[in-house]
Length: 580
Ligand code: FES
Image (tube, rainbow, N blue to C red; front, side):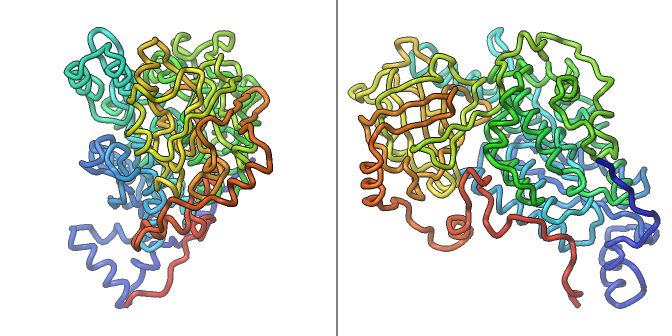
């Protein structure tokens, strides 16, 4: 793949606002000058929007103002004009009913923020789970030169001599409390030990996965994903990113040049190699939709199948992002894909160089963190897509986080109609359930929850946990936190709230999961299934106005990336008429 840089100098988009001596130009420039900008900043140099997802209610991104200043330095050094622009910041740990419900409104707001204002290029300053995909989606739909820089992961957590990871140990400790192995006081003591520095989750959860996806797609500078938030090299990366975007504008190197089908294939394989979050499936499908790439769930199953998971990080393995960085980080993994013939080497990155040129000379500094292939966590990493009469449009499972013995399993369904039903009954000692059962949770999909909550890894019943059992087959239309683990079938499509077959599963039905044959089967006759579906009525009420109603009416299924139907596609950067 070759990219031919545009000619420079040429007239940039921002000059439609700032160029000339008309009343409109003076209006646009003059008001900006109230900030003390010298006149030559408006002379036609690239105007770079630093889209900043800083928010004190988004703790993973609360340190981004410092990085924004570093980006600014870089832009000035390269001869650009940087402006920091705050954008919608979706916090995973705060937003209700779910952060996922707001990914699309954030993407829509980002798209309009870019298109409607005087920018020639963008730096996407992101961190927490939804901020990375929402800004990449918005930028892709505008298609101005854009580059991503993430805030970086938190330092390792430590508790009583043990290394503990964001999220992963929250689930572990929570189960330990339920099983009577840990007190509530100890649980509280662990919380500060888990989050002891600025940054995003330090496991290979969704934030680290999406940072890795941005890099594997070629949308961030090589080496960006793993640098800890508080490491001085994170600031350096921000500054270099600022320098780079100016040249990208001059070259007119756009997301559509970088986020090609080859780039998505690289990202899917990278996700398999790192044991990345199942959330990446949804976000990459949505991002591909924004640049018009026809990516499907089947691509995920096919492309990840032969890729061993070689990154030994929680939740699939034992280390954390700090060790991953010290071992060499994502470039080492991408190089390994290239050596194995599993990389589109010629994919162009934000650097203007090919992906292979970026990674070919890196070294692995720790083979216990980035494992030799023969010691891989699983030889067939990636995300498995199962289909069948219970999931006609597919459902996903992450084999590296699952129990091998449960990947072929037939069991009696114990059904929870929604998350409230689950919470009300799961601790009941009289619940008719044992470890051979299949737990089924409905109405937690994009429309059902709403927003597709991360509850698919629903905790096991206490009476099962007390036997020392830590995993059971669980099936839902929900998502699962990237920091979680278990034999968990997720994103079942169509979701229950749309009348997918999941909606009519009853307690006592037999369900068969056969990962090797990619099958998820509800053991009732076709006639019985059709009869139940004909009698089904949606339990979900249409919200009464506002964004919730817009979301309900337009969100697509998980198999389509849960983007809004009217936001799919690239709408370009042309602006409307002058405002005055
Ligand atoms: Fe923000 Fe995990 S909660 S990165």
